[in-house]
Length: 84
Ligand SMILES: [Zn+2]
Image 1: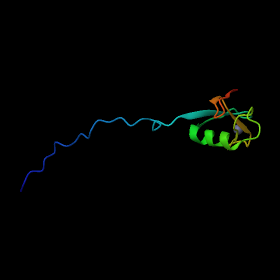
Image 2 (image 1 turned 135 degrees about the horizontal axis):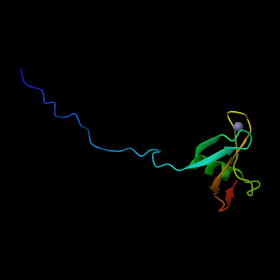
Image 3 (image 1 turned 90 degrees about the horizontal axis):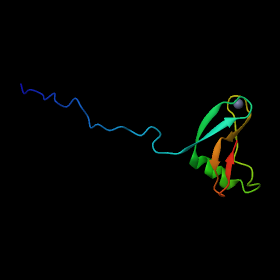
Image 4 (image 1 turned 135 degrees about the vertical axis):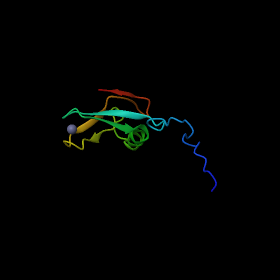
C-alpha cells in the first residue's frame, strides 16, 4: 500500500477577472428603467452598421417591456459621445 499524497488541496491562487476583461456599456430602458450591460463590441458593431443618422446612438429593444434601450454613456465609433 503506497500512501497517496494529500498535500495538493490548494490549486494555484488565481482570481479570474469578473467580466473577463471585456468592456460593457450600460443601457437603460426608457420605459421601465431596467438596466442592462451590453458588451461594447456588440454596441460598436451596431453603431458601425447604423450608417444613417450618426447623431442617434445604437439602440436595443428591452426584453422586459419591448421599450427602447439607450446607452447611459457611450463613446461611439464615429467619435461621438452619447449620453442620456
Ligand atoms: Zn423595459
